[in-house]
Image (cartoon, rainbow, N blue to C red):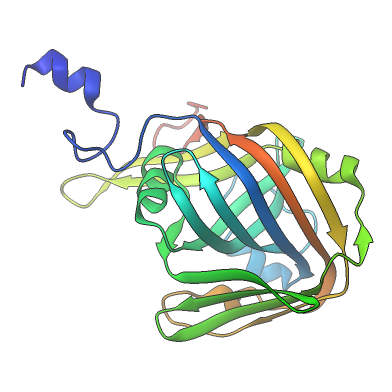
Length: 249
């Protein structure tokens, strides 16, 4: 293979059979269960990277069913997202993500820097209750419940939250084990069609695990529970801060 051919086709690994297609990526009937809770401020400060800023000790624990996504297929994801601000703009920082789909793990980590690890999340309806569970190996590390569609949510507020910027810490090591890329990445979701949104009473329990430390951000108080379904496009990202090149951002 000629050098120019390598350059033209080297967007993902392996070179001759990439794990995922080129983006952007469209998601249809993406279903969310989001439990927003209050946590310990010192614990939050210990995991949110500068120059992101925190104003309140809040965490969003998300369970997401993705039955139809460009290139990635059908899978479920779960994790912790932290409300932050960057240079005055309010958004969200993805702290931890667990999912059951290798192409989505590879694509998320290689392209944007999503903090994805392999696990077994589920989002399902149990009679009158929406239930999200997250198992890491044989250990249940998170369980969320919410009443099923008790009250319509404010659609305008949900759309505003989906339009906010999202931030990731992308890390790629060099071949000698040193850090080659360490960047703060920003991305947006666009072309959103909100198909329904509801609120209801919610609960969340987190359990300690050495390799999946979701419980390090403890649940002190449940603030809200939100269930919604939307079609959206996950756009590609941009680097807004380079930790290895001071002043280059």
